[in-house]
Image (cartoon, rainbow, N blue to C red; front, side, top):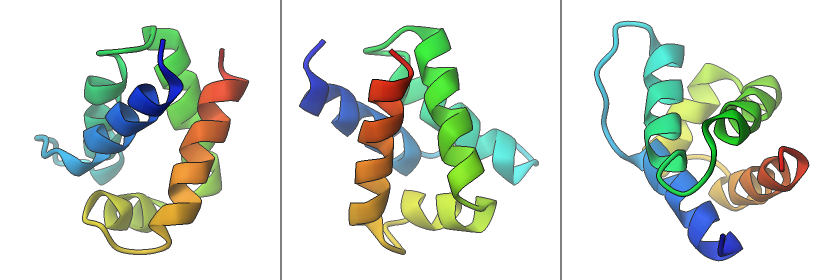
Length: 85
């Protein structure tokens, strides 16, 4: 798996839209939908759980809309992906 492509897909999944009444479920669903296209489901779940421990739902929603410290978030996504291999 090409690491830059995987990271891009993880980030893209947060930028895509989804349907859910619960904001955390919506963000998680979007993340997993993109992530599992290039990585195993368990790895993606692990990565999301790490990100959810590090960031609030408001921050995660902001990142999906291009707000906040996106550079820091990209670094966190990459780190979570490596830790969850």
